[in-house]
Image (tube, rainbow over all chains, first blue to last red; front, top):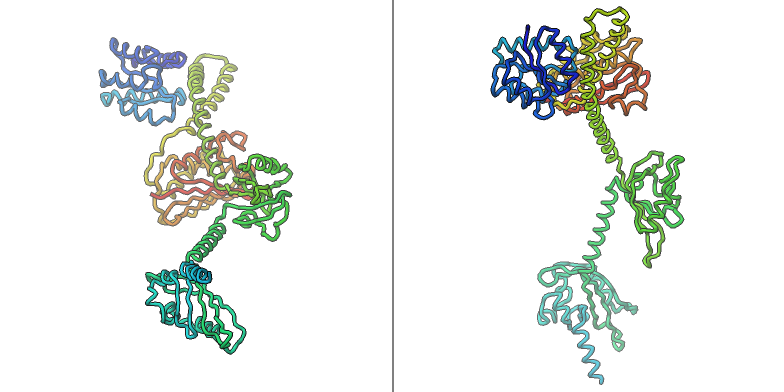
Length: 128
Length: 483
């Protein structure tokens, strides 16, 4: 197994696509639909990386990221963004300590490559 | 009884509102009334017995008055008459006053000589001041009116004929007063075949006393001017309607500004709309293309694979379009740094070849300003603008041509970049829409390229304009402020 990934996205077709894609890449995948659920998972389980939608109903992606950083300083978190060009949100995520971001506007192959690169960098740096 | 009248006359003279003096042959003052004392500011004791010229005109040596007095008193002419004149005297408190005088010779029939004269003076200082200030006001009003350029005032009679054409009217309409007076006012209101709204306007003014509206008027050269028109009833002193007064204000500049604001608002609204749409499309599109990628690795028949490849390429097209729309609607402020415009353009030139361009021979002529100060800008965004315009230039020359790139320093204020092609040009009716999103004349264009350029340059506090002539080519002019 390459990584154990927690995928957080409220849209099930998107989440399931990520799940299937990363399963193919030999990852173990846990999916959930909200930030609140995600925090529960992180509390009771250990993950190599969190793939987190930046736009979530209820607790926002940024808030989830902040909460994760309070307890898990070194857990790589990669943001999923549909706003390919919203530099403000991306800048804020960086400020809150995300490890990188992938955009839903990227071709799938590029998403996988980018994602792996971010996780690798994060692990090498001891995350942050 | 006789005494009574004499007393009354004496009383009347003493208290008259005019200066009354009685002079002997030599002009010495024998009598004066109270008004004289008041105006001159001397007591009767100091006045009587002295020469009137000395008392009234001590600081002026008025030859004209002396000559006049001589003429009045002259015995050699039997034809005696009253003389009127106006002159300033030095009055009480050293204040100069204007007096209208009347000298009446007093002729003694017995001696056949002029033995004395009566002098009546009317103090007209205040009246004169009023008149002068009235004249000054009239003069300045005239001046003000002729200085007002964007207003026109004209008057018509009840037949609709122009009876007055003043205050800026000649400037605004290009008609001279002489040519337009008594012509029907329709001459200013009839635009081509469109029925004039003048009857309606006059009806409203007739009913309500005044009517104000935004409309268009036409000049002698058939140019159309947008105006704010106020029409008032013109009444004679008895309140009878005798015509209408028109005041037209040229609002061309305001209209231009309104149009620009309208365009900008439209752009913003379109940007928001497309961004919203792009977001909604993004997720399902992501799932479709992701699932397609996964299917590609399955063992499938060639026919299915071919179809999948087609679906994939078309999906990719949608993805790129959505990408472009998001790029267009992004509100991000440019990442500003000092940029050498010439260098930024140089770096872009090789990129132009990577885009699918016609194989025709196209030459690039560069005329770059030396010692160009840096502009404040976002390198990637500005290069995107240059690239976009260069690609458009290439595409406009399917049979080859020349692209001139000229940079210049405008008075150390801004960098001017001109990109001139010798291509097919843009028809005039398309020019106004050229920066609108989704406006494209190309079969495969998204219509976003130039609207993105427009947004970028605007975010840089610069300007982008173009001139174009069909079959002669297009010139883009970009201005970017220096740091």
